[in-house]
Length: 97
Image 1 (tube, rainbow, N blue to C red):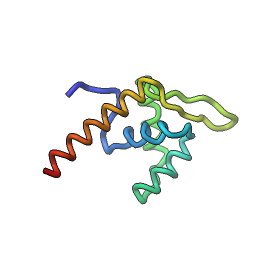
Image 2: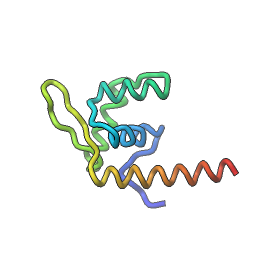
Image 3: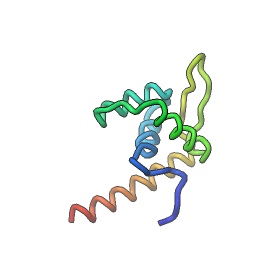
Image 4: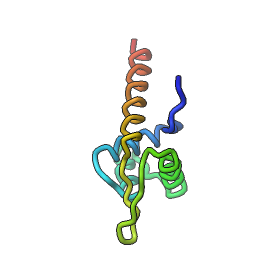
């Protein structure tokens, strides 16, 4: 499979891209939303390096809004999220069958 800019370790990057597809969010808001799905809030030393990697890969962009940095997904990020979703759908279909 072609290597993508979306690091799938632990699915955190995929989850971040999926959430940013719906709304622009700051790191704290992302952490709270992830907590709803996982039952555990990711610590800053987990979420901010992931945001930095995604930003460096050109998949998201962060803009300062007051004291917060609000992240939004780029066109490239949308493409990577779609590709990752299709990969996971195929993977789980194979596992299911």
